[in-house]
Image 1 (cartoon, rainbow, N blue to C red):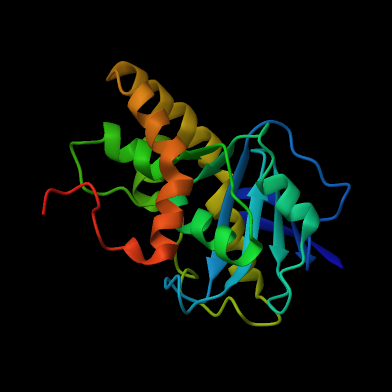
Image 2: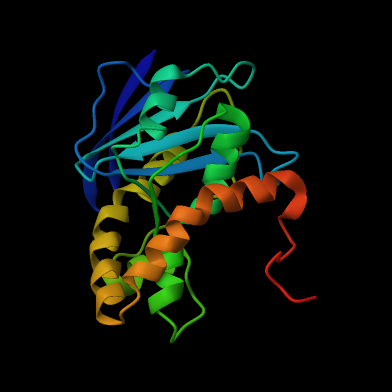
Length: 217
C-alpha cells in the first residue's frame, strides 16, 4: 500500500511516497541514492528499525514503513545491497548496522557525509546534519521530530516531512564535501573509511561498539 503526499520541506514542494512493508518493484532511482533510517532509539541491541527513507536527489522521497514482525522487504533490500549504486548517508555506521541486523543485508558501496565532514571541517566539532547543511548549503533544517515515536502505526505529516528532509540534501552535501576532500588531499583516506564501514558496523553488532581495537591499551 502506498500513500502519496505533497509536502513543503525547507520551502521546497516535494512529493513524499509512504510505502507500507516494502518499496514497490517499479520504483527506480537514478544514480546515487541518499538513504536514512528511523528507529525506536539508538541501541543496536534494544531498538528496532522502523522506517527507511530514500531519494535520488530529485523532488521526491520514498519512505518505507517496515513490517517489524518479518522485515520482509525484498525490493528495498535489493536497492540497499545493489553493488552498482552508491548509497549516501549521514552517520552511515548506525544505519548500516541496523540494516545488517534487521534486514540481513550488507549495504555497499557507501559514502558518509559525517565522516567526510570530520576529515575536512577540522576547524569545528559540529558535524551534525543540521550544522553542515547550514554552513555548506545555507539551509536550516528542522530536527524537531527526531525523537518522536517512529514505531507508531500512523506517522504524522510532520514526521514524514522530517524523514524526507534527511535525504533531500545529501547529494548536494557530497558535492561540497568532495571538493573540500580534494582540496585537502584527503579523498583516498575518505574512501578507505567508507569502505571500512560495513566492518565497523559488524564490530558494533558483535559487541565492540565502544572499544577501539586499534588502540595500544
